[in-house]
Image: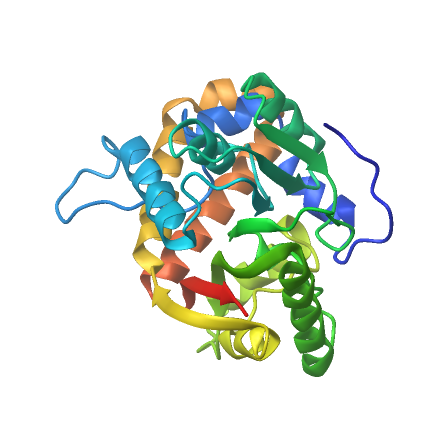
Length: 293
């Protein structure tokens, strides 16, 4: 299902669609069959490339367990990507219905090809979403990085995160689980390469988007959610980026034929930046498990 955006989105829709409305065929090359755009869960010594898909499904299964939504009536996925989480929670874990929110029209097109009648995908901002039936649980998996403008002063950014948590709180039943996966950036020891790469991310690939500080998130959730767990999973995302770079290298000519050299080079640079900044602990990737008060 596609809906019309009701109001202004912050950051702008165009900046987000610049990245997420590259063709689904291109993303299928990069992400593989799971179409899951975040880190996986792999065992020590397990080949990340060979077991990429299994690692992605393990992560989803763990999140579903943490959100306590097996067999739930209704589940919300904010920034739902290509619908992999919602498809998993309904087909495998018995949830009766799932609603996904995304600003990408091409992602909704992909979700419709899953032919899963339990899923409703909407082109809709989290700011505009309302429901008469509160959800039993919710996810936001590596989407929060796109929800707040980097140009805002620190106090205003915190207010925006508080507004986000207030909105999610209003959509959930009391006691509902909410699992958030997000990168964060604390004070960075800047060098020339890192500064150039951060400028590329801020000005070209994810224009205007702010990677949050953990303190902004905890301040935003205070009084609304109980914090059950905060776990840093840097390498799970870095390892996934390395696999995606390998996928892209193997089918580079096909990717260029689909989207052109400029787009392919953009993705190669951005994936490498994310991989090394997570490996070198410049960025974090936190799994935050919350319960709605």
